[in-house]
Length: 79
Picture 1 (cartoon, rainbow, N blue to C red):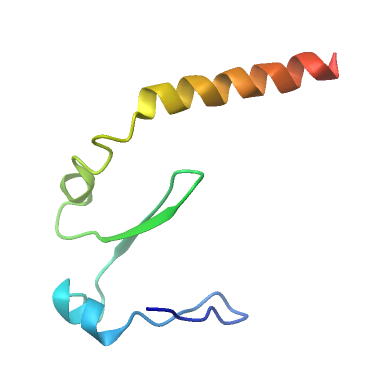
Picture 2 (picture 1 turned 90 degrees about the vertical axis):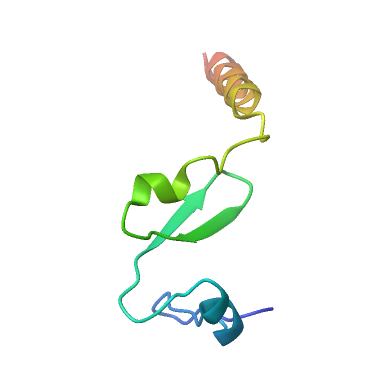
């Protein structure tokens, strides 16, 4: 599915996705930007619980360490 973002930053969530995930008027959404992709989750009554387990299998520690190494390399190149 594909949607368009307006000048004001708005977009439409397709009806089939809204129905499948029970996204109704007033439901809060959580936007997660991991630097490579953007993921959107319905917050539910407990936003922390809604995100629990979403990072499994993503090698987050290794990605963080690699990003820190690149940052260090960039800083060393400046000085």
